[in-house]
Amino acid sequence: MKISCTLAECPIGLFLCGDELCLKTEYGKNDGSVDAYIVSSGESFWGDLNTGGRQQDTLVIPIEVTGFKSIDPPQENG
Image 1 (tube, rainbow, N blue to C red):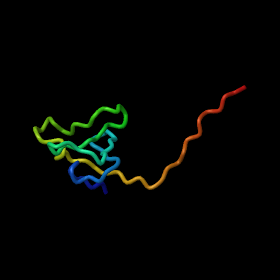
Image 2: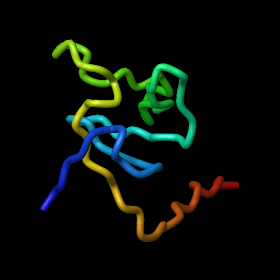
Image 3: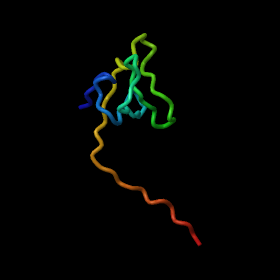
């Protein structure tokens, strides 16, 4: 079951907002907004501003990363 929370409540790390995988950092601004980025583009994550809300009030789904599997690069033929 996916549990959502606000971006402000979300732990530092990866989260989903809609179809976008994003990253919340430990940093923020004086206005309370959070430094967060969209992984696929590197652009700043502004949240769901269409609702007129604040970025930190956007509902997101935290992603728990439990392990990694490396992908071997392709070998050159030669």
